[in-house]
Length: 281
Length: 258
Image (cartoon, rainbow over all chains, first blue to last red; front, side, top):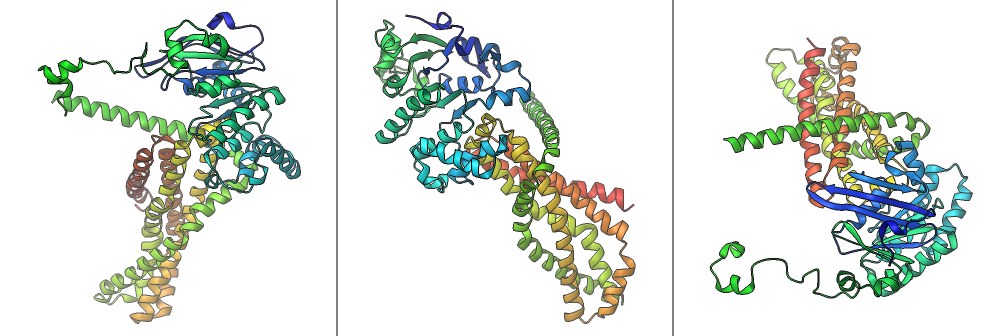
């Protein structure tokens, strides 16, 4: 099975090399190597708190690594000046977990926002483009609604239309499936794959929804304890001999990641006199 | 004792760091101001949000402050037989002090808190991050128009406050208490200097508008992106900007009217 650095080829649109990142005393990444090929749907998976969202923010240049390098389309993101970074971001769409729609703007205006900010297109052309983007996510009929009138799934689809407004080369999805009902989830799963192939995008999905993500991902990178523990196709990962990967993919309650938080034994707590652990009760 | 010193040092350093962040933030926002020339609509909508929507509280407060000034001024002046000077007292009090200061305090509570809450909630709901990822700088797109809008709105509100206050004093002094109307206006006209009193009052309200709006937008932008963080930032905006207004008022008064 291919892992980390060995996976990277010259056709990688995102190359992460030896990435180190900490928040205060907490180490998030300690030498992460990931290559994401042009045109693929790549999934970054791992348990909550492993820094998956942080990784997207590092790729987008919103955070700066302590060490290592992230290159997007051959450009080192963190050496760019502000203007060049903003130019690069025009080619990167991001779907936030919350949708991050502007609450004071309608769906139409939300999708039109990047077009109005970055282009000098006529109002008529902007209207056509916005309606086409909304049609792609099935929400053309909802263009006049405001974000507080949308369901969670609809809000994410509008946010997806907005992320696609400038025809980016990469779209990053931060937990696109969390908190969705089965219908919304099914729609989002299909949309991500469909749009990736139809528009020639590269998609990076950060998620811990194993089944849905594995269904559409070309390759999966599993992160734990600040490192990539396994990379490969979903089929290859299912055949992995790693106990950790098996526990994660099969949602087993106990394994290398223990069910019980480390502490003294139950007998010790109930019968013994080491009252320190429960002194607060 | 050592622990107390450590805490004191830690909080002092945090305050200095925050002050530094505030100034760096201001510099970045100021760089964004020229870009607004191409998009005046953004500033106008902020003047509406901070200025027009504050008109009612400003006008009503101005009226009552002017009426109280008329009443208190009359009671004091009448014992010296100088009630004809009521117009001067009301006008000078309002143009030099009460107009700019009370408007700024009301502006801080009405518009400043709203600015902080709006920007703080945009941060908490990832709207600012989303904007950054769309290659739109939130400091230029969101903060700069609000800063400029607030700086324009407050002097206008202070002028309205002063105007309404003068009419409030006039109503109480002449209509209710019998001061001669001609004396009220003519003494005001001769004793109130445009360059010294009115212009200095306008300068004060410009400074207050800048300080209150800067505090409000910075607190929103710098807040912890949680509901508690936004709530605390909103409180800080009102407390810090009110104290800054009162402190600066003393300094400006000392410089202007020595």
